[in-house]
Amino acid sequence: MSDTAPPHHRFTCHAMATTFDVIINHDDADATYAAQAAQAVFQEIARLEDELSRFRASSDIYRLGQLQAGQSILVGMAAWDCLALAKAMHQETNGAFDITIGPLMHLFITAEGDPRQVSQDVLEQSRQIIGSQRFDLDEDSMRVTVHATGMIFDLGAMGKGYALDQAADLLQDWKVSNFVLNAGDSTVLAIGAPTGKDAWQLTLGGGEQKLPLSNRALSGSGFAVKGAHIMNPRLFQPVPLKPRRTYALAPTAALSDALSTAFMVMEQDEITALCARYEGVEALELET
Image (tube, rainbow, N blue to C red; front, side, top):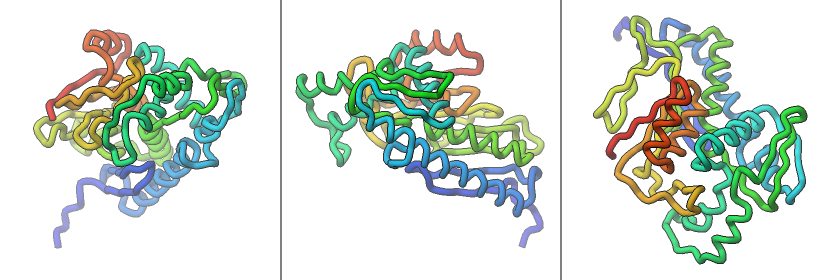
């Protein structure tokens, strides 16, 4: 048996339809304390899933989908944070990011994941309940009002990133300063660095590229795993399959998560302009 300590403590759980990993630098905590901190993280992720999943009847997001046009509800902080960021990203990306695009998924993709043709009449009906301009936020009361009946709110393109951000805050409350949080390899948040290093080293593109990451998040979107599952909210149709994976780097995981999806829709000049407006935001592309 080796006396050499493992370089990191690693813990895993399944939530939000994916696998979450917590990697804590060995010198930040012993095995017992690291396990307790990771368990606290997993409990927080489970709580957030209860509040943000559109499939759970108790969640704020599910309840929003039950409203009639003109109705409103009060929401909790987690839902508010996500809805406010989604609204801002819808505006900043000129509609390339939209959490209400769910009806198109049901139309263009079968339950088995296969594409199908959609008539213009059916598509026009769906257009009437799609668009982040169809809901309003009252910051003073944290009240959300919808302006269409039967809207679908889906935080799948940013909810996991938001969960990582909240988990990072929790770990720092536990006085853990150097760690990596990973949501299904689609979004990674790295804080601090391993002992003796300047940054955590991430592997991209099947091991072909290394990326140092510290106090920053990275999210990737592509077609290799799920096929044609990304919708273009501007054109109301699926994004054509492309042999590349788009990555977004950002100061927070919720932002990188949202932008990696938006970048699949946006033109290169739009992406360049957006990155120039936001400090710490970058775009990367790799062939798949």
